[in-house]
Image (cartoon, rainbow, N blue to C red; front, side, top):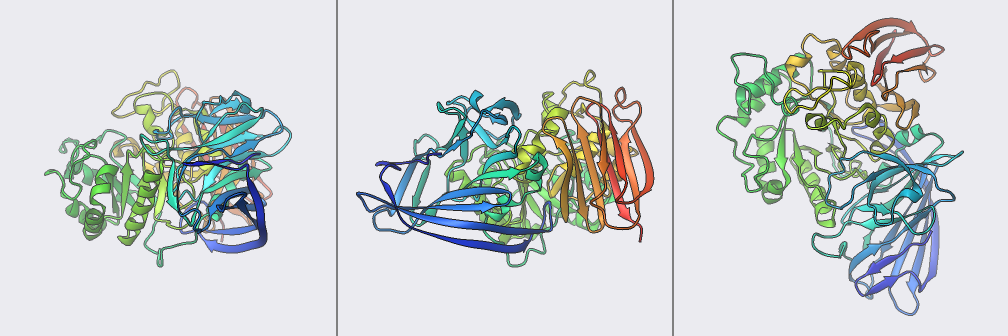
Length: 590
């Protein structure tokens, strides 16, 4: 696979000679503050090849790493008098495969998008040379492993995409340019590209369990991260701020927000997210994010929530954050706000990539967690700054407000594609469940074309240390399934994929302390899965199961709850209706 860089002033690649090479082994264990596992192991072999132009004096290093679960390389530009400042126009790193394999591609069409599209099943050669494919790209090697191409440690660089190629079975990288320019990267030496990563697993599920993306990032940079807390989040926006109290006028006002805070407190939720509108119109880039509208008393709401054991997160437009970051973040810390949701970037050129990094660092200084929306894919910087809890960059449940695109088939595809890069704020939890035929999109009080149990399973299958409860309190109260949402964690000590076929079904087991949580879901096909429990320890376990009811195909909100005592020699029977799911909580009997 050829590697090619094009600079202002000419290409590199054809007149390079190896000057030296070195190799070493890397082994480290480190803790993860939040996420899919409590601890990670970074074990690999690294080789550095030093290259020099002939004729010429410019130098570049190629750094390769080989892991049990993948391989990666990056370009390094060492400090040198012959190359002090540079502008990169293009990177054409090729990935060549021995055959035309099946893959799942998110075809974007242009760089200025928010990664909110479907991953469509296709083949490598069906990706056109002028296509623009977002990452990760997952590829099933016939009679072989499953692999995924993505990038890690995107820092002070342009986001990477893939084009098709005129060469058979090949894909070529493309970089997001600065707006209105052909230049993609402006830098001074020393500098380095992100890691270009090929994840490798015997099964698609192995890719979900991998920590290779985190391993390729820098160590923790926050001296005391004890303030970073995962949690479930009550949220006003998705339902349209529905309130069932006749004494409250629904809207962006203190009474409505307190109604949602009360729901969070009643159900043991850690957070309440006050979404767009609290300081002005969400599309007003000139709005002052240090001033609330008259209907909102933010310090008062924070005190009200804190008295009930709930913390507050707030929504922001990125353009306003860019202008007022220092002042605003200091004020939010003073108010007692614990996190910010920052929206509408919709780009991953070098300028916006640097905005992400600057924002997360500044937020950490003020003990603020971050959730990016209108976002590009994760690349693992949450290892360095774990206050970057989650991000969108996914076609999520909000799409049911105006379309039918957040389907069960999509839900069982994105764990094997988008989620390989990292946490995704899909915002699950719609409880107005209807059949596929009954579904219609509506902005207020949306409907959901999955079973209730599939919505529950999303909380186990989808990784996000901030997990929204998207629906209105009125749609949860008294409903079967709320009892599961009251206990399911948002961060995990261990994660395992029990079974799965991309686009068809998935079953996952995740552990928090001594308790295991099972989540399984299917596409539009009814399905029965036999889930082995051989990951359990010795002894007997109490198991509570929420299954699609016998009539769930006609009444998707139907849920059957049952209990059993089981051991690791047993298995669970997950019977799922079309668009269905299954969850279980497994606790050891002490």
